[in-house]
Structures are given as structure tokens and as C-alpha cells.
Image (cartoon, rainbow, N blue to C red):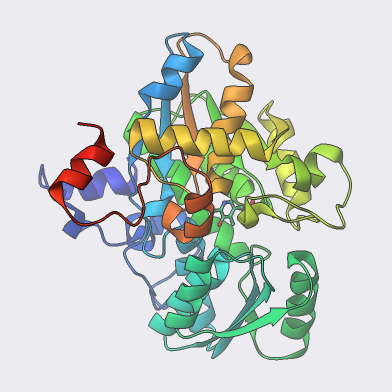
Length: 368
Ligand SMILES: *Cc1c(COP(=O)(O)O)cnc(C)c1O
């Protein structure tokens, strides 16, 4: 029995949000932690798996489509799952400072968890390409922000060199503890559905998350917690698709800034996940991403960031290949509030601006 099930049972029928102890405590036996590990947590994890009828309907083969809404983690992205582990292990080692390169969400999570654990954080970001919500978070959570005239890939090279030369722990997804934390999302999906899905659709940037999910699905499978393994279906934005084009992209470009990465560090692991799972990679255009982003918002009340919508856009693009009666999970990696500029520019809403504040005038505008 999984620890989560034991945990739920021990609280009998009264599992409430308040009972959730964070993913390290919930999945302790599956994680490389010991009694000596100081757990740095913001009670991340236990995010909802929500059925999405508007997407199921568009596929129309009696499929059940769910989204794993990881934008509901404490700092608004799945990066919290990795960061609770990376920071707890860094603290255990006696580390006083951490560093990362980031397209935004890693820096927000690193800053929050470092502060919570009493450590200093340095974050390198590509100037002008970090969504405003994420930058605001890094600043408020107390990181020291270093914005460079270069892209994410360059930033990552720099932080790798710095962490090799100075006593500062690197918390990008090259840090193995990150992936252990992130694999718990696969556990949660199986604990909830009672089985692994047939397909897992997921956006890929540095390709750590797809590798982490695959590790989680395999571990649960090997421990008889599920009878099947999903096909890992990874998606990249067309302007930033090194894993589809099979070459480094020097100047990646996409509206989905979280996955604007031209040289993914977890490339080998991701390709292994694809091959072992009989999965497949494909790219989706920015237009397809925005289409999915809008459907989720206006038909389901779910606001995710554009990078996250790539998973749903990808599923829609591949809908002819979806097997009948299958279960599919799309990972929504980050919260839509992270990128308000994208939202304001990409919606179909009616927005009457600067109205005179009189009832007669308002009802006229409302066309009543
Ligand atoms: C980091 C991130 C990704 C990409 O995850 P990788 O592990 O780098 O592939 C996708 N979406 C969002 C919102 C992210 O923050």
C-alpha cells in the first residue's frame, strides 16, 4: 500500500487539505530522505486531477481526459515539487546558498524554498523573457536576481560553472533531488485514478519533468501500484523544439517562455523515457498553444500559463491517434496568473473600457 493510501486511511474519511503534510512526508518511503533530512516544505503537492469534458468531447472516442493542475502548488508551478527535495537535501548538507538559471518558475520556487529554509538564493534569468508574475515572485521571496543579456541556455552554462567553483548548490533539474520530488506527481495520479493513464501529455523545456514522471510511473509499476505504464507524449513549442528537430536551437522563440529552451540538459533521460514507454514527441505552434489556452479558460474555468497549454494543444493535435476508451492526463505545469501580459493579449472576451458610470450607459453597453 502506498504511503499516501496509508496516510489517508489513518485519517479515516477525513482527509482535508489541512491534513496534507507536503509531498516529502506523504511519500517519504519513495524518496531519498532520512530522519536527518530537515524537511523544507510549503505543503506542496496533492494538486487536483480535473476531468476536462470540453477536450474529451473534441476527441470523441469515449476518452476521459484529465488535467493535473500543478499550477495550484504554493508558488504556482510544479517546480515546488522538485524544490522541496532539492532544498531539504541542500540544507542537510549544510549549504548556505543556492543558485539556478531560470525561465521564471524555477527562480520563483528556488527563492521561496531557500527563504523558508534560511538559505540565500541567486537566480539568473534571461533579460526580458521572464513573465512578470514570476519575476515579482523571485523579488518578493527574497532572491538576488541577476538578469543577463542572453538566453536560458547561456544562463545555465554560467550557473553550472559557478556552482562548480564556489560552495553554492545548483538547483536546476540537473540536481537529481529535483526529479525525485517531481516524480511524486505520477504517484498522485495513480493514487487518484487507481491506475496509470494510457497517455501522459506533458510540455518539455529542459525535459526534467517528463523524465521525473517516467521515473515515478516506473517505480509504482515495479511496486505493483499500477498494472500499466503510460505512453509518454512530450510536446515542445515549434520555435523551440530541439527534441523534435534533434539539434540544439541557438535562438529559441515562443510565446511559452517557460519552455523557451534550445539545449535541454535532460535530453538523454527524456529520449529514454520516450523509447521505454513507446511514447512520442511532437511540436505545437504558438497558435495551437493559444487555442488550447483559451479553451481551458473559457470552457473549463482553468487558467494555466501558455507553456502548460502545450500539453493540451498537443493532445488535440494527435487526437486521431488516441485509443478508444482511454484515460489521458495532460500536465498543466504552471498557473495562468504567472503571465498576465499573455492573458491580456490573448483572449476573446468583450471588454468595454472607460465607460461613464451611469446605469443607462452601462445597460446600453451590455446591449440589454
Ligand atoms: C519548467 C516548466 C516547464 C518545463 O519543464 P522541464 O522540466 O524543463 O521540461 C513547463 N512548463 C512550465 C510552466 C514550467 O515552469
